[in-house]
Image (cartoon, rainbow, N blue to C red; front, top):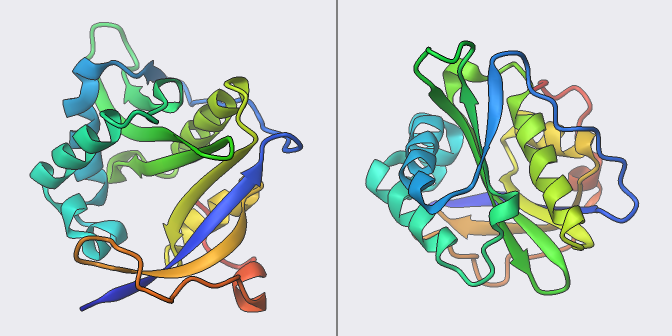
Length: 206
């Protein structure tokens, strides 16, 4: 069974300096509504189906899997609608909107806001949308009174790791997950070593 190294990263929302979540011209945020679940699922599928996380977790490479995942997240009692957003590209009001970004938030115990599935479709990468949508979610967590933000990222996804570090996230745990089902491999969790904590500054930019 394939196993993949993952980083659990956290940010202290009480002391972090969070920039405003700014989007380029033509893009705008769309707040969560249950009727948008299908659109979120389709963004996930378009973002991950041929990407690293789609190869790591098979559910992300299939539209049915993304629909199921979105339903599971949004039905949790801990689901945080105010930290769940889409990014849409629509440069003119009469242009058809192109859904291009998604993020979901969950409130964990200990006043932790957990970010789920940051997805930007390939055609719209390189414009800072990932940074903007993560900041949008972090601001919502802090406004709700949560103390920390948390997420998981596949260790070899260097652009994503660098993005999160640039926002103030730090690696707090290292673990391995099974590709099939995504469960944590028993006994694999550990504190980060020096190599994990001091990730190369030469990693690609997002």
